[in-house]
Each structure stands twice: as structure tokens, then as C-alpha cells.
Length: 339
Image 1: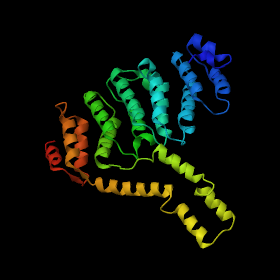
Image 2: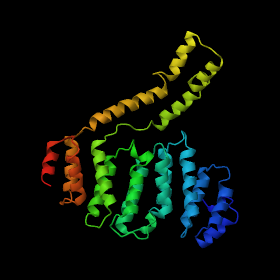
Image 3: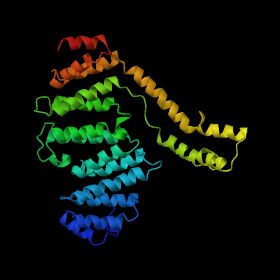
Image 4: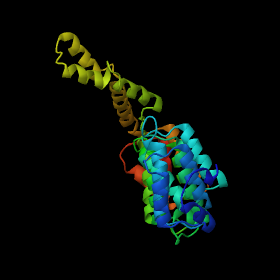
């Protein structure tokens, strides 16, 4: 899509010529591209194209870019808050059009999408974590927005970014760390083991890996398709909340309508089904969290021994597990006795 396909008075040519954007130009774009608070795919493409040209940006542009993508991918989604696989694939393809995340603007936008969405494909989270990892190892301060970044070292700003992604609303799945996340954290720990890392990195590593081993959340948000069914049910004229409100307004209180009212909130409704599934999954998660089983212990031991060395963070994590008072598989207890 060409930038000239959309009317952006005054600002467009100057932005393209100078490859920079000022607060005044951002305001001009807000007035002309986003006057109604709605961002269609065509407008989102144009905003991406402008961002691709920029070599110098202001804080106002970073805010504008993130806000428009959140509006387009989350607030206008169907159902609202759910980032679809197609939308995620589009975003990834636009971000990676030049082969890499383009600076702090795109990374911050990606993190905000994860923080504000109800649910998002795991590809978005892993792209964010991978971008942070690569930027740390390569010393790419432009992506992380930290001019004091030391290649191969994790300081407080980098740890804060990792924490935001790991515990983002859409990424965390009820705050449980998954296998892919745990693997990436171990890779990053191995690569930075000899660096003068922030103590916050040790805390995050121990907490996240222990979370993966002990939390075991079985709950995931209802799918986009299920939430669409719920939306349809809620808005049916003869059923759902609208039907219930109509019956109440009409003063119909006989046995037949009382049974219908019970059905609105009872065990046969879509909302009740979602509630029951969450309660069951949380109960199962609590039961599973009481132990580190053979499979988990084998994974942990293999990860620790992969580089042939026991790092400071790995020792701290093993000590933490030994002090939880929970049931640990014998193979893991044997390893703990060696530290």
C-alpha cells in the first residue's frame, strides 16, 4: 500500500522527506487518520508504512502507533479483546517485513497488545521475548530503548521488559509460565551466565522457572469462537440477558417464566459452562502444583546440564525448590544434594 493512497494533509511529505516525525505532525495524523477512534486495516497499513520510513521518532509517535494498533487489533476485534490468528499473523508479517523488529516503538506496541488483550496467539509473546533476548545479546539498545545497554548483560530495564511480557494479561494464561517461555529463559540464562547481571534477573529466573514447575495452570480463556457464541446468546431477543430483562419488565412471574429465568443463569447457559470449566481447571491446577513429577524433573535436569555448568541462578532455583516443602521427584532431590 502506498502512503499517498490516504489523505494525510501537510504531514506526510515532510515525514517522508525528513524520515522523522514531530509532535505537531502526530497531532495532524490523529486529526486526519483517526478522527472517529476507528482504525481499519487500510489505515493500520498506512501507519505501519509511515513507521517504516522513520529514522527519528518522538514519544508522541510511539504513543500514537501503540494506541492505533491496540484499537485496531483489540478494541475493534470480534469478540472484543481477542487477537485472532489472522490478525496476529498480519502484525508479525508487518513487523518483520524488514527482517527484524524496528526499534522501541514496535516492541512497546507488541508488549501493550499482550498486556491489553484477553487472549492472543503464543506467537506474539514468543516474538516479544525473542526480540528482547536478541537485543540483549547483540547490544541493540535501539530496540530496548536503553542507551546504557551492555551487550550480553541483563540490567533492570531489560528484566522489567521480560517481566512485562511473561506476566502480560494475554501471555500469562492465569499467570502460569509455559514450556516455551521456560526454555527461552534458560537459553538467556546460559548466554549471560558470566555477565554482571542485575539481581532482578536472578529473582525473575527463579520465580519464572519455579512457576512453570509448580503452578501448572490448566485454565485458558474461552476461545474466540466460544465467546462469539456467548455474545450471540446474550443478545438473542428471546433468550440471554435481553430476554430475561424483557420478562422481568413485563412482570411475568409464573412457574414457567421462573424456570426460564433459572435457565438464564443456570447450568445450561454458555456463561455457566465457562464458569464451571474454570473452576474445574483451577482445582486441577492446585492439585498438580503440589509436586514436581518425573517428567518435569527430567526436563529440569536436562536443561541444567545442557551447557555442562551449574550457574548461580540455577543453584538459587534448586535451593528455592528444596525449601518449598512440596513433593520433589527423587532424581531432583539427588541433584539438589550435590549443590
